[in-house]
Image 1 (spheres, rainbow, N blue to C red):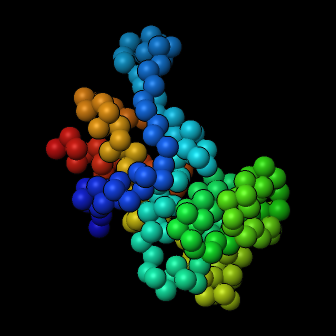
Image 2: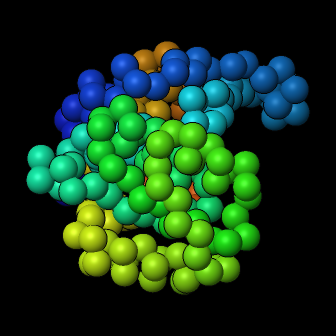
Image 3: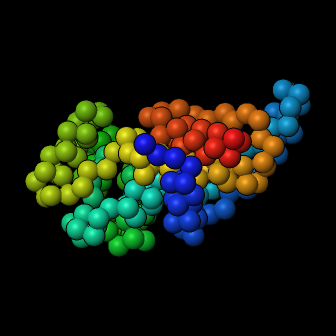
Length: 194
């Protein structure tokens, strides 16, 4: 089980590789709600999304043997780019399985960060199964885009950043997909408010 000290450790590892994304006051949303609303523009990360901190932390925490062999994952784009970039800076081979109908812009960006892209299938089941097949065939570490403790605390660094910049934060709204982002942010903010 992860805890706040894990978020702090992740923060010390990933911060030097991420762009600082300072909170931005939203006058429009503040007027609409009658509250002070700030936005955290994680789209300003080098890879264009919040997923970078989690990817760096996951790959950083692989064993030396796993790093030597490389990683494989699947993604429609943002996780692909984050893993590709993290793998490049940490000098780990990355294979990313993307659907044949994935955005060519996302595919090009993923390749641009140095990952090998395998285009396969047309849906999430296809790319998941292909990534598992490649992991087994090439003895690569399979990375999950949402089920990993290191991923959760890597994403939790965003919550830590919010609380460092605006310690009186009362409510945080967060998009939810696989759940790693909200899990990490909630862990950091709850611990900081305790």
